[in-house]
Image 1: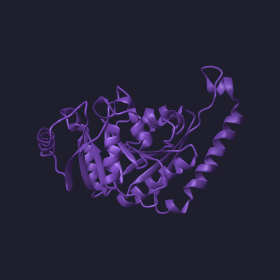
Image 2 (image 1 turned 60 degrees about the vertical axis):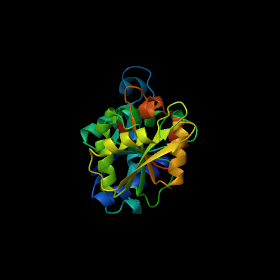
Image 3 (image 1 turned 90 degrees about the horizontal axis):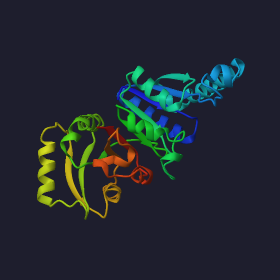
Image 4 (image 1 turned 30 degrees about the vertical axis):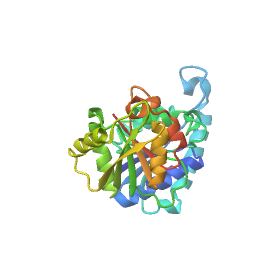
Length: 274
């Protein structure tokens, strides 16, 4: 991951994300684009002319610059190539636009992850970014002083539509020297015999060059609990999944996983858009 975008609202969760991004950048020789969007309330269509005088806008901007400069002087960023970006724009729009403009290959975001996506990083922006980003999005819930992806769980139904995003999954796993645990969750409402599920995974995996992987079939009452229980059982470092951008987070994993999975997972979660 050579070009990493990290949005910040100056919260502790955003700092957790930046610390992880710094670790990734140091390992990969990458660079970080630290982005802060100044979302200003407006009374009309033109924020600058109708809601704020120019001196007030400059006050906001200068305060943000000072905060970013202070963050960038932190010891954990020592030796990291980092650029700061401050713009007057809605957070979600600015994050997506800057991701494309700077050709980033990873977005790292912080998340409270306790009371639903509406309470996550700057409102619902994490949800929007995860749903719409064409590049992987890594969501960090807590401080990770030694981030690694040694045990990487990727849950899927391993259908045809997963093959395209799975290329990025393999790339991530190989880059981090991960043991990639591929898991199918069997539920009472969507049950497959071990023979059928294993055959589907074996045929799927055969098309990719994965350095280190194993396949698993896990039974549980629903998919969300199955992934969380499996990840806990193998002491996973990170959980991966695919998202349907057109359908939103309620359609994680073949249209059935709710946002509860991301909210309840204490581990880092990385998403790959189908």
